Image 1 (tube, helix red, strand yellow):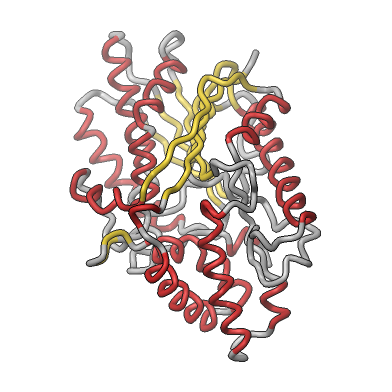
Image 2 (cartoon, helix red, strand yellow):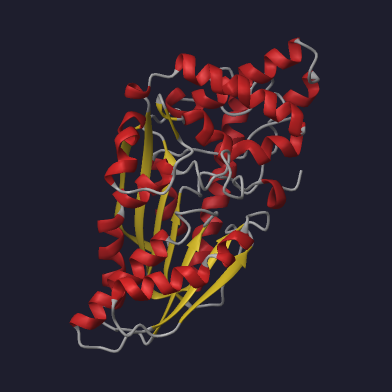
Length: 369
């Protein structure tokens, strides 16, 4: 299975699309706004570069894709106006894997630019927006070319399924029943990927450039903790039921593992310090309770609708928008459709939203001299 083609969110603007099921991601972007604004001001405040290069890694497709870019440009425009300085030229790079729905993004760019100019009401200089398809676990940009690199809710994905997890039978992710060698394989793959990610970004950022990352993590030091992995346990149950009913073969289930790892705060800090290219401005964790999302849409005039049902935030639909292409690539479309129908029922019947939390880890890193 080529992850470059199947590891992407559901495209388009339909009911099951990521565009209509990314309210959680929008909430996280909103929560980190003040810290992000402070970070871009720190990058630009002293030198006021004439040309500013910004990248969003794992941009996906939907209302959130250009949200960070828009907010960042507004902050920069305000700063330059305060300093009585001419607006900079903007070079914006939107990165995701090749299977991402870049066409929908490109079709929205003219409207985005027009709306942005109307909102900021300044003589904004040229704004060039580029697609940058490829894995962020590789080099994406020339040496010393980027000022601000942002990524939100992407780095929990690994570059590939770890090797040596064949005996993780009956599970599709880390679980309390996963053998110790499987836990180690996932952790080793995470360390390899994250360390190389940091190395690549350090080569691409200018001295003093900022790397701003938010990802899903965990509070516990136990990688098989049920904090978030219980959702994949529900999918495992759905698939195992389908094995018992003869819908899929057991070996097909046993050969499937999701390429994800939710690190702890200490694991993230250890890799940043070990790799050594960055100083840590801020590194902390926070939590979002799913119940809070029920009131978020109206409060922030969100355009995202598909995640909300009569019962509030649709957690199952959110997971489907993220993971469906991955399962389709392994099990096929009809099996995946049935699996998610069952998964949705398990989630609805068993997950109390008022006690369901997602741990977020946010890091602000500056490239060392």
